[in-house]
Length: 606
Image 1 (tube, one colour):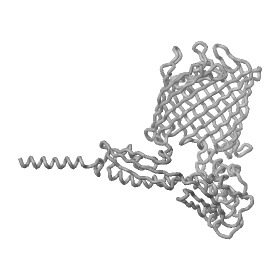
Image 2: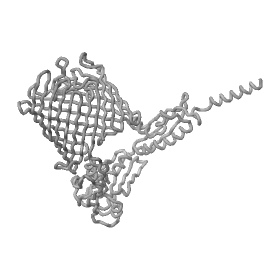
Image 3: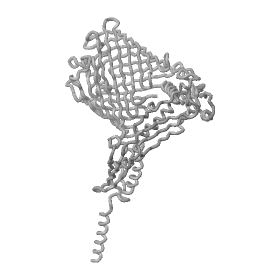
């Protein structure tokens, strides 16, 4: 009996100790949740910003924590949150945390009183040393993005200082520096007084150009791409323009432009020297292989097995002239393409391309034999915007519905392309827009028509899950003609296939005669695709496509829009991307559409 009593007493003490022990003590990690309670400014964007700097919030969905560890994270977070609030202009903000147990879980709550944002009261810009030349302009307060009464955000204040330096560095002062950037916070008036103290350093001009690393590429090719002349005042923007011109040529795997050596920087820092400094520009290049062989293969249930190859030489005559030839063959088409490109055509940002394209095309809609020659000039207006125009001559013989027509077409291909959200390739978010318009005149008849096409591709990569991205594609086109029925069948609009509405066979979505597609005078297609990268080289895709080609010159939204959906696999192999998609028609037409379409593509480049 005594032994039983002792055992019961020990068990009772142990149970009472366990019941009294709070969840999450050291050695027993438990799940927890994090809340943010804001007083004052409580916008969703501010809440998301504060959550993004919280270590506890970042770990909440992944890692249970002990109570003591969570206490430590909360103390660290308090400092981070206060620092973030000050950077946003809330200098009087306070942050407290509270940790409680709720139903076997820990709840961490941050109570944040932002208070009003401190506002800018004054901005003073001062330049050290002798007065600057009359032609040198120091930006005004408004031009650097600061105004009296604006919130004193650290990002804006830092950016204003960089704008001051950038302005001087584009006017001949490569060594411009901020001797001081002072921000005085007045807690009584809740205001900021900002002062910038600029040291321009010595003024400089571009000196001689030195090149290293050239092999097959001639020095003249590099020299023609210089956006300055020796003796011009130094401009930091021109360094980047020069670097971009060389990189875009495709001839170099390494481009280093070094306008300032350590010795020059030391010399420029010497006090009391007012002479112009000549800055030599050192260019180090590494040529990439100038010849490329590409092999391609694919399969789809609508076009069958296909493949092809391409050959490119990017430096035929030693100054970046390139030639690219390709041949693509499938069960229903043979396409040849030869292009000769001359860079620096009358301007460093302008090129001339001569091309010849023989085509045999035998899809379900028609049979055509076509050869097209063109001369096109492309001008890069900026890093994100380009224009092109030229002329083309096409000889075309087309059979459709047992009738054959011959055309000799003179046309003017015009196009514009713009990228938004950064240079290509897009890595975070952005868009690529292209618009083409090509008027055609048949040289044997009075036939005239204008074909226009707009393509828009949008990319968004999710912040919280960078392995997940969404891609949206939209295409809209129209053909206007002087007389109905004068447009060659192979130049009309068709939809359906791997690059259009997946789930429907190639060119099967268009106005029909019986069950045969005959092409339309307008087009509207759209696609939404979600891509998820699971492992380093593997990914999944899900998509929904829709649209149609229409008999009228403008899309008719009251007409039937066909939809397709499906999924795919992606493997990014060392020899190139391999993709497998399966698409299903959601508006299956009896006797026309199959239950599904399969698309496989393989590319290889040497």
